[in-house]
Image 1 (tube, rainbow, N blue to C red):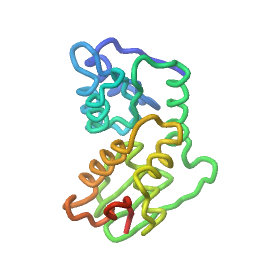
Image 2 (image 1 turned 180 degrees about the horizontal axis):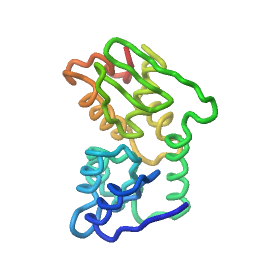
Image 3 (image 1 turned 90 degrees about the horizontal axis):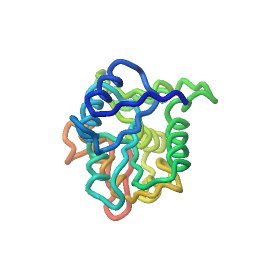
Image 4 (image 1 turned 30 degrees about the horizontal axis):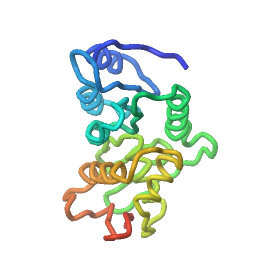
Length: 202
């Protein structure tokens, strides 16, 4: 891995604007701009995968990190081997997602167009920027229409069986996804809820 380091939030933001990175490892506790502020501003112009580093046991930091657009979080203190494993897992899902099959799968349903190889989403011809995890969730649902996935199942399939987070992670991502793809998130057209069971695409 080639690594660049930034020592405050402003420098981190400048680096991400100036260079294309495969992944960003972002501490919440940073001088000048907090990690949450940096994450939020990065999401205005980039879908680069972001892993937040949060204080151990601070659920609010974890939820806020996901709300602001992070793909994953790791609690401190952490084992560096866990950090490397998480980075590799996200890189496998994003950077080389379509390389083995070289498929040109584009799914169109009504106003929605999902380019699985290019990992791009279009609604009514306009591109919608999704984070890596938001795209993974939507792709899984779209490729399996009308199949209901429980929150636990989505967590396992998208984040991995060894992911230490809980199902609130799924709820946050579904809510953010609906805010981006639905004209009226409270009456979804694409990502539906089967109460007491889970989520599905129709």
